[in-house]
Image (tube, rainbow, N blue to C red; front, side, top):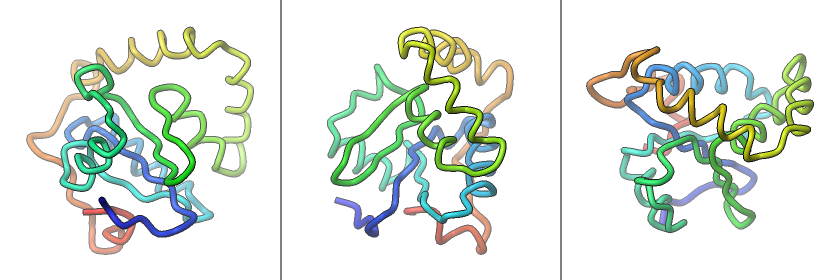
Length: 138
């Protein structure tokens, strides 16, 4: 299993999705508490974590927030928990918790289903710059 430092949360994302890669870039920018580490679902570490959590990626090909020793979340719940860790105007995202998870996931799934069509995709996973490499598991 991947060695994850204490007090870190791992964001697993679709490494070939432009929307997902842009979201990771934003998450790194707003992660003022240095809480998150990142791994593409397609990466070695991503696959190890997914296998460890026994997640069927044919049913869940979305964002996964893994908090070692605590839990993991997918789709809209993962996205909201990530945004809730940010400061400033991101605190307004707490208001989205009033919507039931089933409703939030319908919206999430619609965007996820169309993400390649609307935002495009890469041939391969993003390669982090040397400055950002420490934020990625591999």
